[in-house]
Image (cartoon, rainbow, N blue to C red; front, side):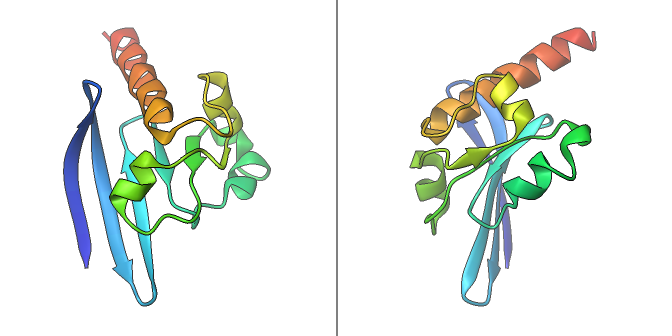
Length: 111
């Protein structure tokens, strides 16, 4: 089962994606410039082999529901996430606000 829903966090629009798989769930909250995800996200790969892509992403581990993901803390993140102020240990809600701010800046720059 795949469940996709819109969500607003502090005035910023995001899309939640929940993919139910055997014995696990893939959870993601995203917008047009970045995303946060459950422990399935390979941040090491994004930081090392795919760093040139400039992906804004953060991961929370030990989460089983979308609510837990959003209420969790950043366990790891990419260099681009760090560049917009996301840090390890930060609340995921604060990380999402920074991703929302980055999207607004990108949209203003595209005008």
